[in-house]
Length: 322
Image 1 (cartoon, rainbow, N blue to C red):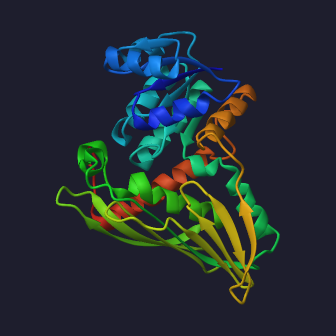
Image 2 (cartoon, one colour):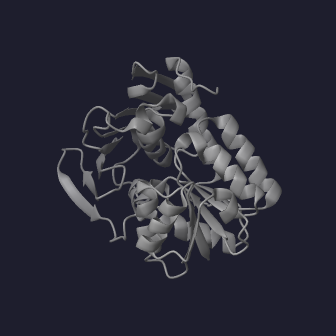
Image 3 (tube, rainbow, N blue to C red):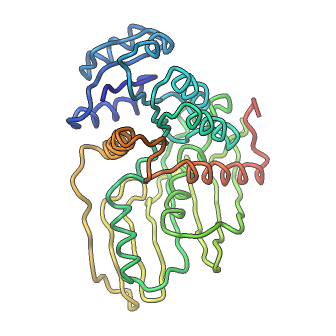
């Protein structure tokens, strides 16, 4: 599978490291608005070709799968370009800035018969199945609620402060607790209550989100770009509780009984850096003739985007082009 990267940056470097360890992937092309930058990235990570424009790379018939690593604000435009050029696409999270954009891309993917996937790495990691198996096996009894948080000190990152680039904690950090909750809790979300502290520029610095699921189950979530949090997810049942150390890249899963005694610990498998799982899933889906990955189907991407739209509406937070 000939793999290409659109918009080489910090996160694209992490992806390049991951695909370097996947035998089925050929590091083929990289494109930037700057040819010099593309060449430097290609040289560093041993990509075969470098292009000074996205359009030029997408005209290359050898390119098969494109990883879109541009800012959130440009995901829709760049993913659409890839699909219209006949390329399979893996789009970095957040998939788009709103559900309307997501729907249009999904519709185009179906029309073209091309894979379109969201690169939300936690959906593809082995830890997801580990957690599910523990819950399904009754390790903590009937699950009734969970909490999850993710926070880093990021006020110096200009992209996150800029409304023009779809900044804010929600699209960059908040979607991880949201995805964590949706992976654990089955059924529909019947109520959403959220609040946020907005920056002077109008993006969320921090937020609090409560999702109520059918059956009276609840997820209490938090994300922030102003503080370092423990990144922990805790799932509560009527026979104990389960701790996930680092919901952003699970390090260990711990099981506690009704007396709060630690009874089990489960380590995750060794990995390159965690990004490899989503690429492997994309290659598998493409070879099976599918347009979505079973780990993160279009319906779930759209569900997350719709929830985030609803939250931003509660905060009165809009991006300039909305």
